[in-house]
Length: 244
Ligand SMILES: Cc1cc2nc3c(=O)[nH]c(=O)nc-3n(C[C@H](O)[C@H](O)[C@H](O)COP(=O)(O)OP(=O)(O)OC[C@H]3O[C@@H](n4cnc5c(N)ncnc54)[C@H](O)[C@@H]3O)c2cc1C
Image 1 (spheres, rainbow, N blue to C red):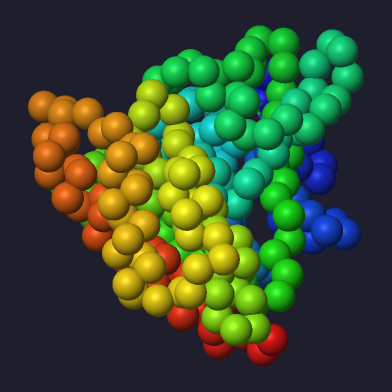
Image 2: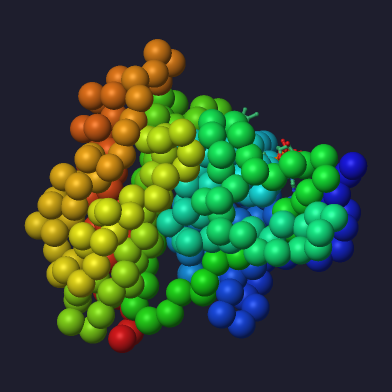
């Protein structure tokens, strides 16, 4: 069934406390959206790293989610935004946390033969917030990454971290949320020293595998720490420039 012409499914908009992205929205639309660049830089930066422009022009964020690859750039960025998906089926429509839809590598809880994701949403950030995307791949285009990392955070007025969310891939069978690292960071000062300490926790909870095609586990563990540190630093810098 071709769903590409159903009206309304190509919208990116703020609806009350949520930012909502329709099922037909492509990575190119995400990359070009001023709203997302302002409110969810992690997602616009991630969209710009997917494949090449030709892929970005046709590939949808929702298709990326249903493909359920642990390294999928769109899915991992959405984990850092605490996203939900609206699932429509014979029983009606309901919002589900995105993480519940990933069952295993390439395995989704969504059955596209009788269910459809109609939209993705995430809470519109408030206060002094920032987010960033980090990614390393063998080439700049047409390849799933060796590692990717999405960070979103908010700062208290005294520069302590109010909240942090970290999405990582591929470090588990599904797009991964580094919850132990997030818990460690909450309430601590947003400094380089804190970010370095956080990387010691992230390598304990993330379990990257060795892959013949991409990289060894040892290499990934080293690089993961760099990506997390850089992501945290860039997101914090963005948050600092916002007026309290
Ligand atoms: C050359 C190449 C390079 C790529 N590089 C990258 C990359 O760098 N990073 C990355 O993350 N990905 C990459 N990909 C993967 C690609 O970007 C994603 O798979 C894409 O986002 C899928 O979106 P789509 O709209 O084409 O989905 P489709 O391929 O049309 O669908 C994928 C699956 O999702 C289901 N589906 C689609 N829409 C819905 C819906 N609304 N509700 C329920 N089920 C649905 C379909 O039935 C199908 O099972 C690459 C792909 C190619 C071909």
